[in-house]
Length: 215
Image 1: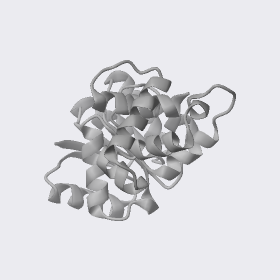
Image 2 (image 1 turned 90 degrees about the vertical axis):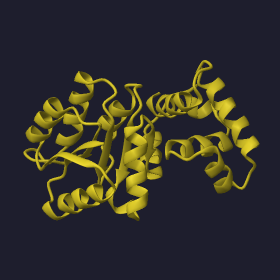
Image 3 (image 1 turned 180 degrees about the vertical axis):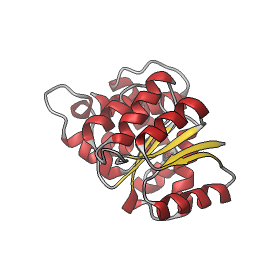
Image 4 (image 1 turned 60 degrees about the vertical axis):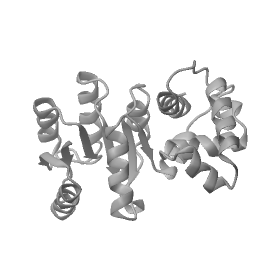
């Protein structure tokens, strides 16, 4: 699996390269700035991009803007964002295009190598990998009435937040101390309330999370 990595801090970039290579990923490019990321994504068309939000030259949201541009040119390009902060505007835009294959992890909350590698693989496969704090901050900005958040019960909100982290029904059941059958019922209710027609369950899970965060 080919990866383009964008991280401006040398030690972190080098550490991520070594970690990914140790888990059989091929590093197509490892860059430290926005223009380099744009060129690498356009020229190399990787299986997944791992992108720091704040890159030179602007050190604001250069990485996210490059990722959005790349996804507009390569719809569905899997992007895993690594950041110390939640950049709400561009994060919502990244999540809202409906193509799946997105993740947003906060650097100081990635606790072990297995967690990170699992997130990369999940995003590369078209799924989602969202840090709960990212979800909470995005949802905190939502306003108005008759939103999906208001239509879901408290338990359904718990389920969809765990879905957004990429957890299976079995893992959600274990976390919430309920049966898998109960989780399946909650997910079915979520799909109905979000107006998602019957289709492949994995696809509906991704669409449910994206719809939930986008509106």
